[in-house]
Length: 293
Length: 289
Image (cartoon, rainbow over all chains, first blue to last red; front, side, top):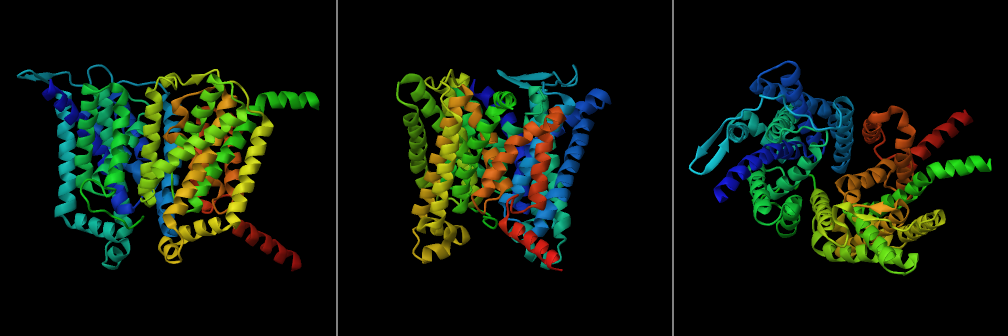
């Protein structure tokens, strides 16, 4: 029974990790708590649904297109709202409040355009196959979710660690001013980060939409809460921390539901967050980016 | 005229009550912001106050003022207890920790029997009258204005400007931070108690993340440099949904848009004394010419 729970936890946790990656990337590079990340996640989910439903795109293509759509929204938000605030050197509270406005707006627009009720993918879109390994039951969907999340995480990690681009981003995370003096195109990389972070959020949205087969305008908010908990758990701005934190939260939630009570499922994330902040505010892995605090 | 007024009052008294309560909430977060603390626990403190006061009114025969006082006292006590460890954190970390605290409170209330669980409390006696809200809001404003001018207010200001410098000047930083946190919690608790006694019903989801964010929004929207800003911000943002009825299902989107525009174009909120003064001087100069 425990092994089965672990599989479920792995698939839930990898989605949390994927969502938190974009969230932590924006905090690390731009120094902004982007509270519209949940709304962008939700729009990614709707984008995939519409593409599959109206244009009959295959699922993998819809996933890529949804990432693109989410990425473009992220870029637009950055260009129209965060950029002028950066230019003004606004204190960190201000961009956060602006993104609250974005989240309210996008959620309400989605509600007006698509309706408030849960939407489902058309029958037959979601792969139904499943495998039995010993007494374990694994669905193709779970494997797909875990696989896609892991691939995206590895790509991001490789870019950050091994490429010139990643080095430039890490330089900006240390100090945008110094990075600028070194000849790095800081503004351009801010755009790129916003795009990439939103695309990751959109991908997480599609995967969550598939795994619960329920898409609603309000699915972003609870995910945002989890995202906040995960990046605190992993240390804010820490990419590796977000991955491990996401998996950890997935395991903690699934095990709580399995062995304690499903009532406390939502308390787990924030209980953990509260404890971590009291005991070790820099997150599980220590090092912290204190530049905006 | 009188008939018109009665009809108007019957339709809109909840909105007018809402303005008063929201103004108190915006002021409660103003207190912590004026000390440089970004705390998002005020919705939770409001909830603790609301539940305390409502449960006293429903289960005992104690008078309303006593219920309200308890509704202020318990959140203040909780703030005192959680403030000691939490207020060591700064900036975004404090915001996140207080947000976490708020969610923990919500889930606890959701799962407790005595608070009615997810159904919340129903049939709370309607005891709040207009003058209660007006009086308590005025008292809050007076109290905060006095604090602002006192040694405490100066200490808050010093901490907000530069914590290290304040400590070097001999300001007991942790104690003042805790004081701001506790005052904010008490004000939010009273607002919650007042609110519960005119809405008839309260539930755990009335005091969630969204509400914490809404309170913050009202304060920042109005401007946090003084006491007038949060009050005006609360008034406008409470009236806005009524005014935007015309947009029907898209009215929240307009709400969000207005928030973005204010943040972008009025960085110090709507009520910014310096901007108003500059505007006046410009007009004066034009007149003299």
